[in-house]
Length: 79
Image 1 (cartoon, rainbow, N blue to C red):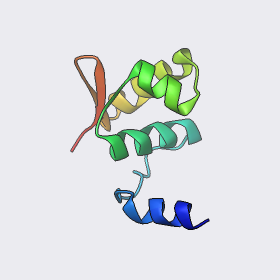
Image 2 (image 1 turned 120 degrees about the vertical axis):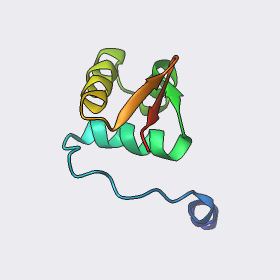
Image 3 (image 1 turned 60 degrees about the horizontal axis):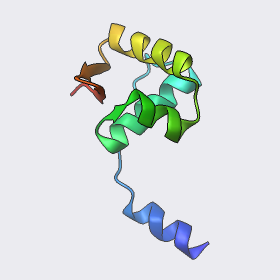
């Protein structure tokens, strides 16, 4: 228990999830990208245990509403 509490204290804080993100999977992807700064589709797939086809759909929807953008092979949260 003490180790988990210690890690939580070190975790960077991110702002609230935008209200326009409705799906649980999209929220998960957003929070991960906000916490890490950027990630490739393969990093997202391995870390979040989501299928690539699911991630592509989620990322397309986040890009469409201007919350995420693609920078080379990485996906990043827009400022």
